[in-house]
Image (cartoon, rainbow, N blue to C red; front, side, top):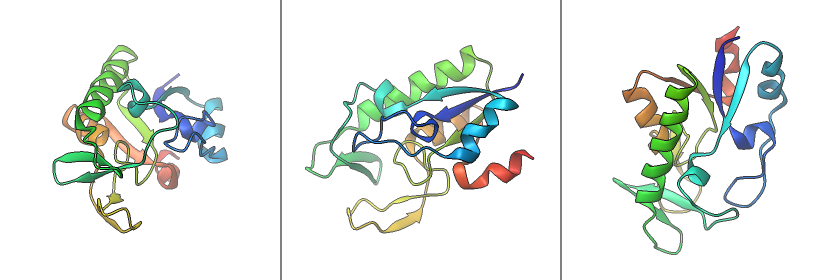
Length: 143
C-alpha cells in the first residue's frame, strides 16, 4: 500500500496553532487506499500547541508578537523529511496556506489574512528532495 505523508490537522489531530484541527473527510477517506502518515512540522520543530500564530516574512518565520521562530520551522521540516525518507514517501498532502505546509499560497507576513503566491518551509524542503506536495483541495489529482 502506497504511503502518503499528511498534515496531522487534516486527519483530525488537534495540532494547529490555535489548538484545533482541520479534519477533512476527503483526505481521511484516503485511508482505504493509502497508508496515511500524520505529521505536523511545527510540532516536530518543538513548537507548542496552541502557539502564537506565525507567518513568513522574507526568509524568516515570525510570530505575531515579533519573535523569530525560523529555526523551529526549519527543524520541523528536517524532521518531517526524515520521516518521509524513513517511510519511503514521495507524496505529501499538506495544509494549504500554512507557513510550514502551504504549497501554492501563504499569508504575506502582515497578519491581515492577505494571501500571496508562495510555499511553506516544509514544502520547499520536500520539493528539493523529490517529494510531491499537494494540498487538501487538490485530492482529485490522486484519482
